[in-house]
Structures are given as structure tokens and as C-alpha cells.
Image (cartoon, rainbow, N blue to C red; front, side, top):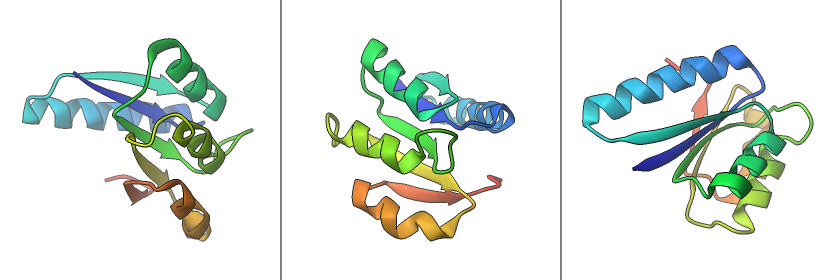
Length: 110
């Protein structure tokens, strides 16, 4: 089973992304455990309580700890997780490269 984390401080975005991920995993026949988080701290706590994710969809602009700092902390214990930054802010791309993301996806996701 694939463990997928979705982290964004905007609840509507999280719900939209979860729906899209569920549709995709269903279509390709992959079972997925999808966890929703609404802050970087929520995501780190979820990892501490339930274990590492295979894929994380992570917004860069989060209230409190931003997505890049959250990814830095994740990378301290997990270099294999595929982190996909989802953002509408291109100015963070150079800084985000330092945490070795798998990809960048522009908002809004279509």
C-alpha cells in the first residue's frame, strides 16, 4: 500500500487534491493510505505517529512553518520520500531545490 500525505493550510485545496489522488490511484489500481494535514507541524506529527510517507504533496506557503522547512525536517530522517511541492510562487524554487523535491506542480492543479 502506498502512503500519501497531502499538506496545505487551505482545507479546500487539501480536499481537492485528495479527490484527485483517490481518482488516480483507483484508475491505475493502486491501494493508497491518504493522510491529510493542514500545517507543517501536523505533517511532522503524522510522520512521528504513523511512519514515513512514500509521497507527500506539500504546499510551500503554509502558515507557521513553511513547506520548505517542513521538507528539511523530513529529509533529516527520510531521503527516499518523493516530495512534490505544490505552489503558485515561483520565487521559492531555488530554495526548494535544496531539499531535493521530486517535482513542482503549479496551482491551481487541473
